[in-house]
Image (cartoon, rainbow, N blue to C red; front, top):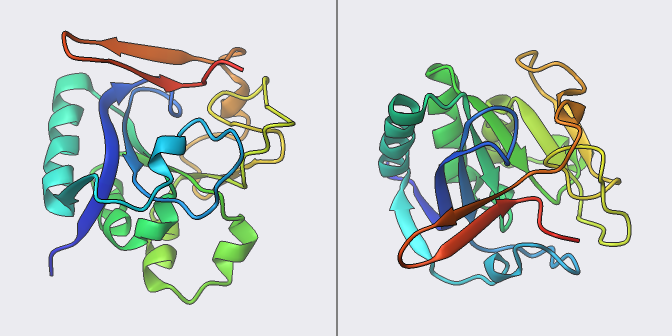
Length: 190
């Protein structure tokens, strides 16, 4: 059975979306509508870039060879709304020694109560979960790759040690400049 994802953006290699060098993908669509979300253009439910999970896995495999990435980050939009395709990708990552980090507006405690088998499979193949809605009134300036102080970093495996989100001691942002566009990711300016 083929699984598809609706992606808003992809970075083949970034050091701003989790620990180490990572392949990052942003999904299109989010119901949360956090005020001042840094990815507001990814909230609308619309067709962006529809890709097969197998094609995405091929791209991740290429990125591992080209950039020596250590993991993959799922960002949004809201990744849990595309848990079917992402669970397939996360399972492949786990089998190929790549870590998985998932950013979600849902609380971990709520996700534990779900009957959705794809959400359960995604969580089973996730190393780090950053949960909770973004709160623009309480930005987190101490932890890397975490938007606001209310959000929790939940370690779902022992791959990373608790506190890794504090190691850089500063927020990071990357710019990718080409002849056609300027793209940014990481911590947006406050």
